[in-house]
Length: 148
Image (cartoon, rainbow, N blue to C red; front, side, top):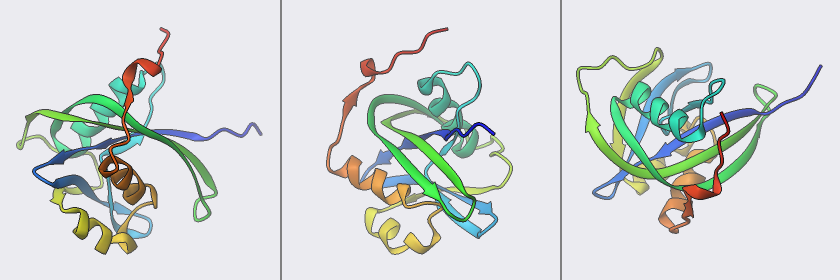
């Protein structure tokens, strides 16, 4: 067997001091996550995070910077994740759009609300990515290269 990490992309979206999270059904029950998901074949990181944000929250997201790259091992699933977290802004909202299967709702939460619900976070990366955003960690998108 060949080992490989699961590459994911996440949108850290802040508006008026609140962050957009999605509440979703998981094997551990209802949990919170940033709009995030797996990178698809032949998809750039930028296209992937924009797609995931739209599918999971009905918000169009334009990435403007990379917040960080995170490696996390989940003992529950015996899976290693490699997450690329992006910050940016919303360009449109489509409230009539159906959300991805398993997503209950997209919800705006304050940093304190997010910290208070850490027992319902899908992974520790949710809080870490938000804290890094608040610490103003910003890397230009030009550091990413996508070859077709």
